[in-house]
Image (cartoon, rainbow, N blue to C red; front, side):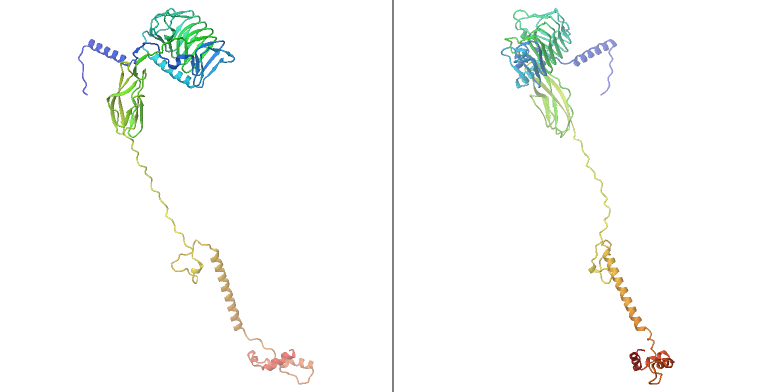
Length: 473
């Protein structure tokens, strides 16, 4: 867009800037409900309770409660034992401890508290109430107090309603009094307290306390009204609490105000939820009065929740109106952006390198071996057990050695030199000589017999040899 330049005089420019600033500040102020009070703040089922707490009700002394008492959220009640007291529940009053009735009463208390807080005050910034006379209407402040011995007057009629909003604490001093004109009722006085309320000793208190946290009543005070604590405890010390009679049910209405901020960003294909919230009594209904919701989303008219699964990326402008029959209704325009679904890149798995596998060498059976050689077409036996081949080789070696030794022995025997012949057995002595003479002359015959070569002895007569052996030579 092209930039423009103003030619207004300086003073005129200052006026324009001042107006713009005022408009900006006005737009930044929080929205306030436009509230009509035709009757008291509606308490629902909490209207019958003189004392209602979340965590505990604690009593010391002979306190008397004319009405119901109850705790929720696993709270406890002490000091109101039916047999030992010391506190007393007046006839007709019911004690509720962590039951459905007390839970519902707490829910109704929350509604009443929200309604009372949402009312537009006719006077803000109040602090001290002593000596004041309040006309019907709504008053607000931070820390609101009624100092000790002070008096507060409510000026009105039977139909008048007063709501005092204390954003922080409410402190009622000792020996204080509250005055209602003839016809006016404590039924229609409400104290909305942002944290805790304290009522001093000997006080004359009128109205219903709607405290966010706790309520403490000191010794010997009289309360015509109710002590209702949303999240904390109620503590009594020898006090008297009476629920006012003949109170109108109450029906305070307030126009709705949308309080939710800008919607969050949606994503196509992903479930989405965004709650549109608004104050107002009764609870408002929600409708789309301009534009459209993104495809796939819808609005729950009862709860104000936008939900669904958007299908198409882009931005869509939609106006949602909250209405509850109390004019004016409130509308808010939203821009809902739907982002495209994120693209998830495919997961790339790197290739796995497998090392080459060396094939196993088959074992060659012994039966396939021929003459010490491997059978044709078979690989050497590199992976078989080596004991068997070694044994076989050893046996073969031993067999070969045995064969060689046997053959050598046989050859040696066949080629050995001839035996040395014995001496010839031919007698060299005359027949009939003496034996000694025969033996003595044998040497001559022997020498004569061996005079020739040894080879000639082979031809010695076989008979001579036989004769020599027979004779013992």
